[in-house]
Length: 137
Image 1 (cartoon, rainbow, N blue to C red):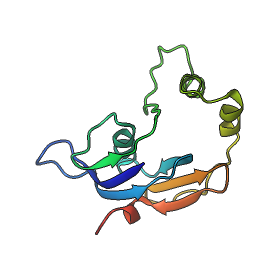
Image 2 (tube, helix red, strand yellow):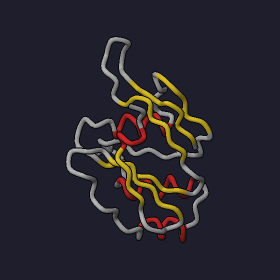
Image 3 (cartoon, rainbow, N blue to C red):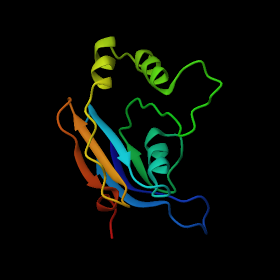
């Protein structure tokens, strides 16, 4: 999947939530965004998942994606973890792959006050980059 100068704002005169994000994610890589409230994590994930259309740029090569909203509906009979397990099965993941994903180590914390983009390939160590480093100056 490739993000090419992706930006999002909610209206033409509104400030950019994320702007000029360019990054390539190899197939089979697990990603995680972390950072303080208001840093654009949820917006960027929604654009990546195809829930939102970017205001600028584009996302190409988007694989099957799953998205669990910040506020998981309490009326559902699933916990967030059970929901992800169920969605993994629907998308063809084996029980062994789902179980392995549950045992992945947590990454190092993000730098204070920054949003971070984490990625992992085949259960190896997490790599960490500030989201700002993915944006053009």
